[in-house]
Each structure stands twice: as C-alpha cells, then as structure tokens.
Image (cartoon, rainbow, N blue to C red):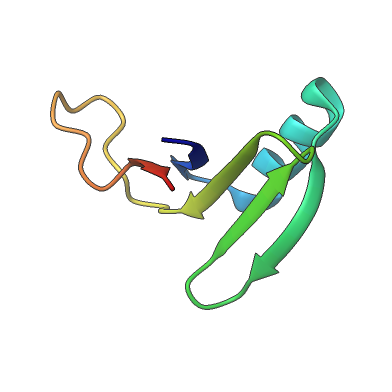
Length: 70
C-alpha cells in the first residue's frame, strides 16, 4: 500500500500554501476555486489543503480530514 496524499482542513488557503512552500519547500501542484483547495508537494509527499473558513479546530471530532492511499 502506497500513501497517495494527506488532506488537511485550513482556514486560509493562500496563507497555508505560502506556509508549506516557505517552510517545507513544497511546490504548488494545483489550485481550485470551487471547492477552495490546493495540492502542494515535492514528488514524494502531497498535501491536499481544503479551505473551510468556519471549521471548528477545537472540536474533538475533526470531520472530513483524510489519509488516502493507493
């Protein structure tokens, strides 16, 4: 089983793209307007960033974040 990508909920898509590019040298692979999401990666690691502006990050149940594999 190979890991395909990891999906993360974020409150600010642009800020998150810059964070992962600046701190982890991940490249922007693709960005979508509807739904607001982007994929960043380096050929081996791919993160799916999904903008959810009203997401409750303090909640114990974190909803639709996911880990995908092939």
